[in-house]
Structure formats: structure tokens, C-alpha cells
Image (tube, rainbow, N blue to C red; front, side, top):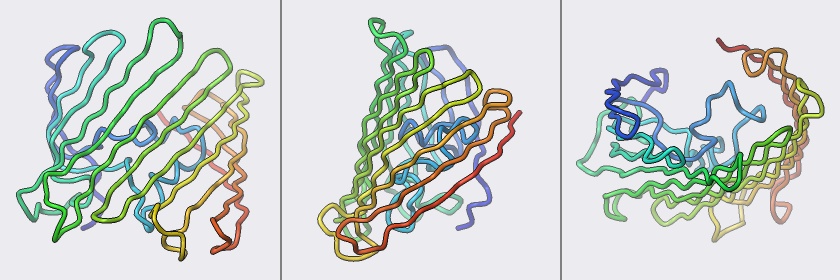
Length: 249
């Protein structure tokens, strides 16, 4: 199905603790998957979100469904919903009566200012066969205080009999209010049981760069150097230079 249509939904804002949303929108999976494109720390999202040709897309995904969300406490947010799938049916009719339960919870402990810990996952109701079921489970951490920003996520995915795993660790430091230096280690293994071909080999990326904020995230320039490597030398290593000039309002 076409991916041109992205989102269309209705939200009933009942209270801070309980709100209801129905339509097609991002499923509550992964911190960076839900993060706005305008506020990304690097030019591209993590590999487990972007490497869709090799079984990625473990987040940053949209589907038709209904969701409850809100703040159980000033330190705890939740999102939980039922969807047609985990994006395989976006913009297309539902082909069966199987659904996916997807949820995310975030905790901000009062004893460590700037820390956020969370978990998210998706559980399909379809049998393992004949169609591959898609389950997800991951954890996340964000720490931001002063000039320092630290992020990390681990996400696992099961697509039928194939088990995938992605992880990244991110560090950012503002040497000036408008200039941030970043480093990220990012890895995605589309099949943790095999490293034999370009389709299933584990990829490890090393990202360094700088963000220049002309006007916070409303106008910024991002420059990234990416050293892309692959296990066992199955695919030659690559050097990439990425640039992004972005405005939002």
C-alpha cells in the first residue's frame, strides 16, 4: 500500500490521566521512534528504525488503532493501544481479525533530575504461522541536564522465526549554547542467528558530528560523519557524510 497518507486521528482529551485516540498514527514504540523529526539528535534515526529493507522498522511506525494515554503520576506516563499491526497494514485494509497490543511506559525518578527510563513493546495475537507474527520489546534511557544529553535504547523484534536486535548509545555535549558535539554507537542485527549475507549481517555504525542551533530546533544545521562497518567483513566498510538543514514552525 502507498505510504503517502501518514496520520489521521481524533483525540478525546478527558483528563491528564486518561485520554483516548483513534485513527492512524504512530504506535507507542521506542523513544526515538516517537520523537519528532524536527528534534532528532542525528541526521538519521537509529538503524533498528530505519533499516527497513533488512527487517528494521522496529518503531517509527504507523497503523490504524485506538489508544489510551496519559499521566498516572507526574513521574509516570503511559500509552497503551490495540492496532491492526505494527505498520505492515498502514494505509491498507486489514486482511484478518488478528491485532497487535502495543504499549509504552516512562518513569522519571525524582531522585535523579533529568533522568527518564522507559519500556515499550508489541504483542501480536496471530499464531506463529502461516503469516509471520511481529512482536517487539525494548528499553530506553534518556538523561539530560545542563550541557549533557545521554540516550540509549535496546529494541528486539521477532518476525516469524527471525529474531532481530538493535541498540544505540548516544552522547551529546553543548560546548556553547548553539553548538552541540555528538557521538553515537549504533548497531542493528536483522537476524541474531546468522551472519552470512548482506541481508542478515550485523551492522555497526560509529557516528560523530555537530549540531548548530540557529534558533533551537526551529532552525538548525546538522553535520554527521558515519563509519559504517559489518561483521566478518561480509560487506565492505563505508564512510558517509550527512548534512541536514532544517526548519520547523
